Image 1 (cartoon, rainbow, N blue to C red):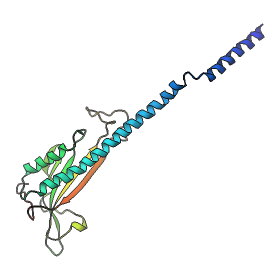
Image 2 (cartoon, rainbow, N blue to C red; image 1 turned 45 degrees about the vertical axis):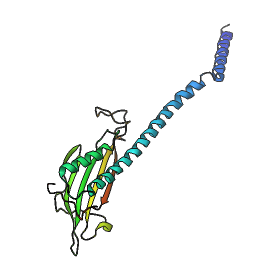
Image 3 (cartoon, one colour; image 1 turned 135 degrees about the horizontal axis):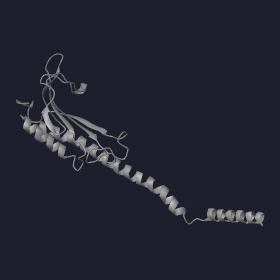
Image 4 (tube, one colour; image 1 turned 30 degrees about the vertical axis):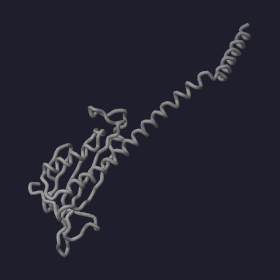
Length: 206
């Protein structure tokens, strides 16, 4: 009886194992559990990529818009430059996880045999605060095609440390373990334009 009972128990176990292997009632739930995390990751990555691309376009738009507004002036003041940079900053909305850095530099290429590229005046916005940037008559650089004797240029640099939403929080704390790898993405653009209404644009108090 002991040996027969053992064989019977073994047969029952084998029968249950066979039935378990052929049972397909839980397959859909298991597949769902495996697939859902992958779908969620793909959804968030797609959403983040589209928002990053749109924000990058807006960063470029800041440079072109600020340069366009400045080059329409004949004279300008620091307060007016600050206001123009604030307008540029507002174009990033509704993105507001970080603030852009905007630098406006008036550049004069001297009318010398060997022309020098000098700063006429400069103003910047960093972290929402406004201040002067490069010193007057300091040496700067432009692309060779723009290095033309006796010309005046306005250069606008717009930069943003883009913070992906999957790593950002309102209290600046790290979230989800992604911060070390995707803390920020550098975006930037530089525009050069010439004055439209006068040969130069003066800023006496810059």
